[in-house]
Image (cartoon, rainbow, N blue to C red; front, side, top):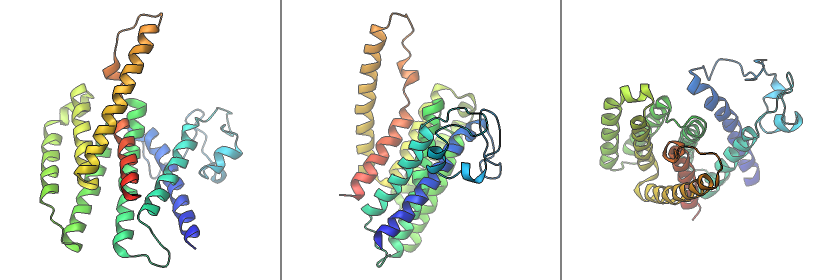
Length: 265
């Protein structure tokens, strides 16, 4: 019966993943993500029910739009599968058993799914646009604030250290309103700091330290490989490695790896 439970969780994961692909495309364009019907971004044709089934639609359609024949990026399929796998690995780490479900684990799993949604959205948008989307940061702040309230009321946890993080986040957001609108480099840096603060509140300081360590290693490898590629290129181009580095994307990937590793230990 546990296999049945994990199958349900996997299906939930790929459904969330399908939503991520939509949200990552629409949020930076300020488009509605809840009421507007799904459509092909190339020909604007509305998609039917059988074109919206996660994973299966991509396979049955051969990775192409049914209406215009435009090839659908494989990242949509990979994101759905990755989301499903992440949900299952998290549930397995919590040792969920269909015969022994307890409220704390189920509640934590629910908050974790919302947190993973936040992480996937930040990562997807940063990967595409090198931007830490402010509206998604607000979404993450609501998640961790609600989680803090739950810990305090239900589990009587000491939340003083979390309040410090939230206070720091409020200050950063207050002084960065103009920077966010201009999409400046300073805004990106503050967005990264806000992202790290949200990670620290939900996953804890130790997990965040591991996340930052993995990020530094991955970023260092990227910079070295990028410099080697530029040095061998016959076309002279300015070295914009800092502007090319998707630090938010790397942080989010590192955080997911850290979170899944810790819960499955």
